[in-house]
Amino acid sequence: MQPTPFLSIIVPVYNVESYLAECLNSILAQTFTDFEVLLIDDGSTDGSSALCDEYAGMDSRIRCFHKENGGHMSARQEGFRNARGTYTAFVDSDDWIAPAMYEQMCGAAIKYDADVVCCNYTAVTSKEHIERRDVCSPGFYDRSGLEEKIFPTMLFSGDFFHFGVSPSLCNKLFRASLFEKHLFRVPLSLKLGEDGLAVYPCLLEASCACFLEESFYYYRSSGGSLTHTMDRGRLAENRLLFDTYDQLIDLTMHPCMEKQLLYYYAYQCLLTLPPVFRAKQTFDQNDRKAFLAECSYPPIRRAFRVVKSGCVSGLHNKAYVFCLRYGLYGPFRFFLTH
Image 1 (tube, rainbow, N blue to C red):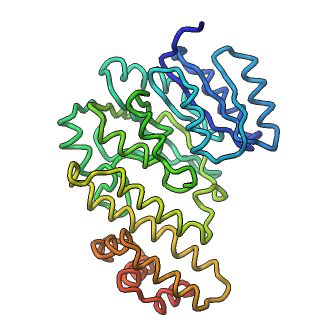
Image 2: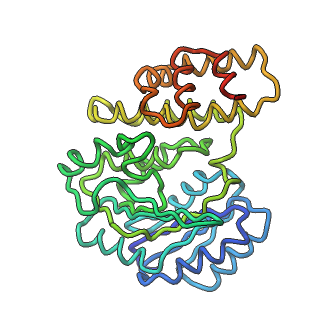
Image 3: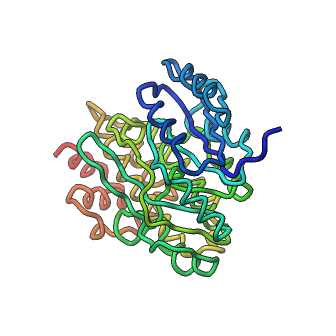
């Protein structure tokens, strides 16, 4: 029987043949070596599946699992079910990581016995590299430090819209015994905002966490990614996302999260509603009903009663806030087309 690795690195894989080797090579180049890699082939139809098997045959630390397509979170959960490490990390298969990433992050986990370790990341486009940094100061935070300095601005930093702590799973390390229940509470159907449903409740339960200053993770940002693809199904996803946050975060225990959640709900609506409705070639009575249904949905209604248009940048976004607050479909449609 193989010894239990310190770290399990879970890599969901779906039709990323052109990027997968770069991703896996960056993991195998880590200066920290006490890890296992779980490749979860989520029903790939290109050469990714064969490439997963090839890498599994090259290194005994790599295990490959093939499954029917179930989506990104389904693959992550399948990986976690088979993981053996004390800590868990995630790498998306079209991204890559710096060689010292896990040496530094696992070193911090060992030094501080931390439940969560976070680093910063770099968004990579075809034209530039943009470093994304958490608002909180780097360092170690015990429970009282988390409650005083991290939780009050964790989801919303106060500047619309900047997270205090990035919702991404991929720039973090989690103690597996703490993280398990949070990962499996995330609805599998979500494709937008799902990471935060595991990250923030886990941090709220953590006894301590460490935030590193360095940017070790490289996120490949593409206009064609799921994050940028909008259709009417996004409205149902928004509602599921907001309802799940309401279920997972106990505001009686964490009252500082109430305003943050409402501002986040408003941000998600501004991110999704205009492009969803703008995609319609013609407007009819059903569109008006759909718009009014979104405005009256309880979490959305609460959010736009709280969020002030003055804190939102851009004339159109300010107009959308006003229209969503008062259910003004006519002006909303006007601003969509002008």
